[in-house]
Structures are given as structure tokens and as C-alpha cells.
Length: 618
Image (cartoon, rainbow, N blue to C red; front, side, top):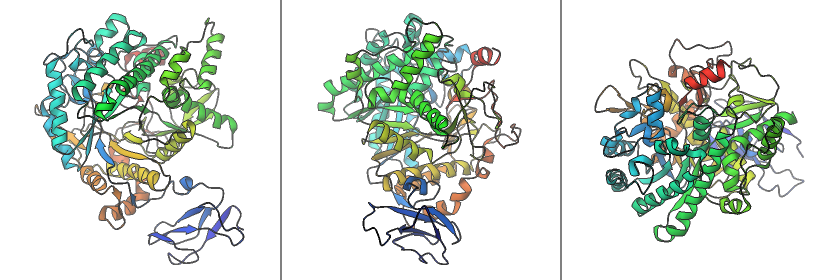
């Protein structure tokens, strides 16, 4: 019996191995069956020999299949009916911020207070929604993910204040246009742009009154659109608007949480609001509308710097609990916050002299009410971090990486985050190219929550800077989507994940929150100086269309061979060099410097003046 590693030496694809399924001329799938053992429970490994057949060490017993196939290209497809889409958000594309009865949102006020007005018109999708649908058609997509603007439907946030028929008409027109063109609407109720009136009157999400108002809003939407919308997400990335808006003042409504209490209150009410809206759909609408209701969770994946160091391993696990588990555990777990989070915040609170924990408490009734309130999970999966135990409080580590973790997860003490300097990156330095994080996080989620239900990858993408002369040759985006879509193919074919949709971020260059139009994630270029907001396809449109219209990478398809040819190159930094201005500052490790006064704290939000003044100067 072999132990540990097997050395394959081959001069031809089938040489010295059992060639059960040729993957490419220099790749073979190998079944290992020692004579002394007749049933290994489908133990097999992939011998990956790139470009030339040569000696390659492969772990036989110690390496899981997901690890053995982590960095290889895998020809294959997802099932028919899989949803291929782009993702958008109301504030970022619609414009018409005060047109036809729309009320002021938190993001309208936040941007205006900071002297930023690009969102007032944005991509003018309120006027040109038919062009949005047409672009989806050009991409060959069968679905479209978008969000509803609460204040376009209920201008002051309340039903009592009146339903805005113009808003209802706009979304009806969009939904009908999608259906006429064979696109499945996938709708988020809340993508961060809540009513400013609530913030002014009672503090917005920190006040439990918002739970009832959100449920009223959800009911209006189910009633108005649920006959045609069969996929509802209550929230998009609650972590982002909770921490960004009520923690570090990087997003609307711009609250700096010096006492580390407000973000926990906001999250508590967001979870309550989600559960309430799910139960309303389940009890009042599901039987007639036959749809589904879930939530979209955003989380960076985390791994230990040293997998043999128990403290690094623990830190990586705690990072997931404070980031994803904060919202996932109440819904997909036991109905409550992760126990580690409860214990750590309670201990920190006691040490700081608080009479009780700063983390709010769910009642036993609420725990039961929270549990299981999702028919699917959407994961926004962009990137990864490496976590290690450390009491070093310096802002930047030797890799030039800013210690975002100390700001974003202030209760998780004794650990730092970093990155591997070899990871590629686009213009948004917060998001490095780590496609393998997709399967790692899916595997973690299934194991942690014993969840075997449907998954969607509801956002992922890469940005380039806003250049004076647009560059439509976005090879970095072609590489990015080749890598990340192949991960969901692997998840389906190799891991048996019930994965049902891939939603690219994003359809067109939009108003990327606080960075406005300076970050460009779009498959289509948007000309913001043109009153008609002309949209032009970038080169990546063709590559994403090829993937979407064939359900991945069928063996023998031309784009499959192209993907195979560029795969290794796409894992290097070279394809991504064109995303940033030539004047960008890099350190000796090749990582663009994380200047906290101008860079980013989470996908899509530029750190604002409040962050600079209160974090950097203090």
C-alpha cells in the first residue's frame, strides 16, 4: 500500500496510470486501488501535469479532492436551468434620486453630505432599464439580479405615508421586460439604501421599530411583484451596511461607533427584520406565489497563516464566526449568534466595565423564530485573508497590508489579517484574486451549518480604475470570470454542491458607492459624461457569454480550450497589471500600498473623512 505520496512519471497521457477519464492531453484522472484493499469509498486523485508531462507529486491519502483540484482547470458544466446573471443595486444604477415621488434614501443624504452627487443620476437605469435588459440579452444570460429602492416604493418608508405608484410602475416595467426576454428576476428587497426619514426620526437600524416597517415594505413588494418574482432575497450583505454604516462611518448613514454598540444593535434588528419578512412570505404568499425567500451574505474567506499553529487555526475560524457567522448562525444554525462571538464580546464588555454584554440578546422565542428562515443562501464571494495570532497593533504589516481587521472586527483581539503577496489584485486593493476561496467557503458552510440546500454565488467581480481613455481590452476580467466560474463547475461536479446560479458583479460600470465612478466593475463600459449614459461592451462580454450560454466549459468547446490555455497565466499577477494607474504605489512585495486615508474597507465603499479623522489621527 502506498503511504502519503505517489510519484508519477509519464511520457504520454496514459503512461503508468489508470487512464479512466482523459481531461486534457497532459492531464489524467487516476483511480488508486491497491491490491490489498478492494473498497476505498471512491478515493481518487487528479494528476495535474500542465503543458508537459513530467514528474508530479500527488497526495494519495492525506489530500482531499478539493485540495488536489484547487488550482487546476476542470472542463465540465453545471446542470440545465442554472441561473447565469449579473448583479446590480438600485442606488448604484437607477439615478432619478428625487424624481416621480421618490423619497430620500440614507445613501442620498450620506453622499450629498460628503459632496458626492454621481448617484443622483447614476447610470440612468430609471430611464434606460430596457437597455439594461438588452445588455443582459447580449450576454446570453437567463436571469437578472437587481434590488428595489425602498423609498421609490414608499417615499417616507411607511405604508401610512403612501405607496408611490410611479415606483411600482417602474419595477413592473422592468420585471415585465425581463420576463418578455426570458430572464428570471432575482430581487433583493434591501441593498443598503434605506429611508433617511427613519434615520432622522429614530436612528434607523439601531431602533427595533424598523423591523415592523421593513415587514410592511416587504409585504407591499410581495403583493405588487410576487406573481412574477419567484426569487426574493431580504438583504444584500447585512454585514456591510451594519459595519460600514453603523460601525466605522464608511457608508450610509455614517455613524462612528466609538463604544462598539451601535453596529450590534443594527445587526440585531436586521436579523429580526429578515426573519419577520421570511415568515410573512411563508405564511401569507408562498402557497399562491410558489416562490422562495432567502438572504445574501457577504464574507471574505479566511485561512490560517500557519495551518500547524492551533492559534492561527482558531483565529481563522473566529474570523468566519464574526464575519459570516454573525448573520448565518441565527438563520442557518441554531437561531442565535455564534457561541464564540457571544463569549468573546461578553468578556470584552465585562473588562471594559459594561453592566452587560454589548451584544444584544435574542429571546428563546426569537431564537426559534430565526432558525431556518431561508430557502436558499446567496454568498457574495470575492476574496480571502490569512489570519495569524498576534498582539502587534501597528497599522501596516511587512507585506504592506493594512490591518483592516482591527477596525472592522474590533472585538476579535489578539489576531491580525494579512495576504499572500503572490495573490493578484485589481484596482480595489481590498479584493485579491483567490478563486479557490469559493469552494473552501461552500465546504465550510455545508459543514458548519449542516446545510445541503441551494447556493447561489450572488456577487463576484474585479474592477479597474477610471482612465481618461477607456480600455475595453479587459483581459483581467476575462481571466477573473474564467477562474471563478470554473470554481462553481468544480463545486457541482466534484463536490456535489446544490449550486444554482452565478451572478457577476456587475452588468455595467456604475456608482461604486463612496468611490463613485472611479471603480469600474462593469462588463459594459458606461460613459458618465454622456447624458444618455451610453454603454459599450468590453472584451470580457464575449468570454462571459460563452461560459453562460454553454453552462460552463464543455469538453471540446473553443472557449474551453482558450480557458485551458490561459489558466496558469490567469493565476499570476500579469493579466491584472492594466487595472491600476501607472502611478499607483507598490511596496517591495508587489502589493499596492493600503493607504487607509484613500482606500477601501469593504467591497464598494471608499473610506470617508470620518474614518480618516477618527481612525488614522487617533
